[in-house]
Length: 305
Length: 103
Image (cartoon, rainbow over all chains, first blue to last red; front, top):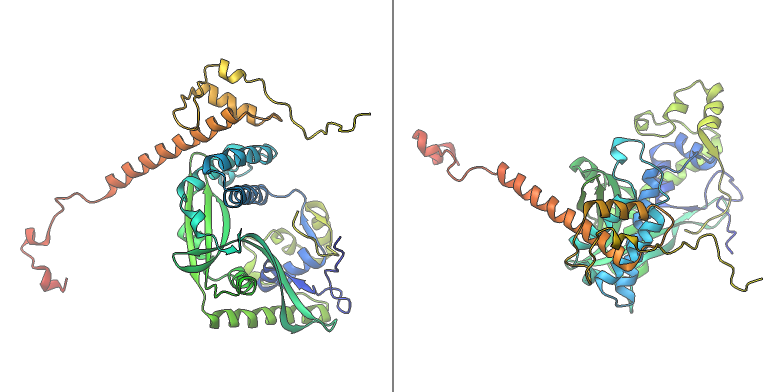
């Protein structure tokens, strides 16, 4: 039972525990942070992109756990995982946009089979904690920054896997997209707060000097799967700077919460879900929010299901 | 009342009619003869709340592997067409010395 509060007691609009996602949103736009976290607005139906990505994560997690922990063969693990993929994949909603056309039951099975065949050598690369492979690892660490409640802020999250890849300790993160994987898409992972947070977490969990973050990108089209990997090397100085960035983001949220005003970053609107809301007159925004979004403010820290 | 009630999430086994529809399933994941109509029917079955047999899932895997093989072959052919011909035009053909251009 975990009823640990999400928000600070003394500052009810400031989270006491952060994630790479909440930090990224707060860093991107304080108004978006207000709408999605403080007020708790989210899309009425979970998007196919999110559901498909989660489904593929689950399948790969299942596959690696079976393959690495119980010593069964690749084909046996794959056949089992296909059963899981079918079970999850048949409940996916229909694609709505051309870019989502491959995100179907067949696409899920295809991505899984092509991935494990392409990266047949990967089992050797998993970092191990004793006998256990480093897959799906929960982490939590404290920042050197005190919250209004008088305790250190914390960061929590999940690592897809930790590897020793070509002699370099590497944090592994699956990314799913629709269609071919472009250089533009890969570039966005070069500077990303998630890279830094996860690499710091890997160092804390393992005691090893993890210095690389790898975005393992799976692009799913109707008739093909595009597999590309984007490594980012991070020096200790870069990780230290990331901690300063994180502190600055949290301080900014504290200030906005104390002022009761969360300014928009209009340079970040292009792909924002709330673009259609923020572009309306402030008086009428709530009507648009209520018609297009569900409102559910989180109150406690929830574990991944 | 039964001690082990059947939950709604338990899916029935399918009756294996695919084999009768001309889908020849051999042992293991290799050498599966794939009738496109039967494969389509297999995907239809997969979309329903049924539990596919190991053999049927093996066919799904093998179908997707074949698709990958075909895609890779097509990609290699495309790449070969794009690469420059071996007898590409040389600077010397125009009486130009590459070293004059700092090359």
